[in-house]
Length: 291
Image (cartoon, rainbow, N blue to C red):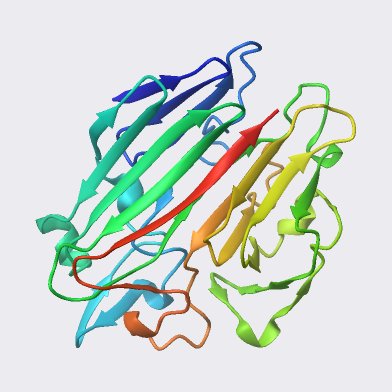
């Protein structure tokens, strides 16, 4: 099932499977900003990454002496969520732990995903609640993919990325699917970054982020753009598949990140892992602003 929310400017569609944003359109022009999941390139729109972000070494982790397996980016994107609240311009979907999740992830949790339209954008809010009597360890992130180009007469290479604030950030290179901390460098996010597919020949670009951050996809040849803004995410990933010349780009705010090349496999020691006390609730959000 798919839920539709709308206001005077925008219409958004969200699937109950994975609580995945599937469409964000201008009401006036019908311009579609979200990638429409052509399987020739990548068959998803904007999956939610939970309870891990990225890949685990050997696809496994350990917790309290037991070993578990999780696929890359976790399981939330493949689970059915329940709509628990809906208005004309907002919806909240929920996933709670069950017998199936506990076999691969031995924690109780309630994950709420809230979408709300306002003005020229869509706010996406994540809430993770720990109903148990033990600490909850998790990561969470967004993976929205945007059409690039946003106009038929332009190309991927006509666009650039603009970072705000315009300053250098630590870049975390990947070695295979894993972060190689020994190769950390200073990323050139203090200037606009012209898009080419060759930028992604080593997979995603990953940057450390602190405080209010935004990343904009824009072109000098068009008034139309997409900006992703967030305040409480420690990392952002930017990705399009390589070597395919795919007509989309993902901007992914993350509260967590893939395993490092020297990861121990212990969940509690994982880079970027969130630790939530019994009875507590973790909250974070990001916004998609379109023109």
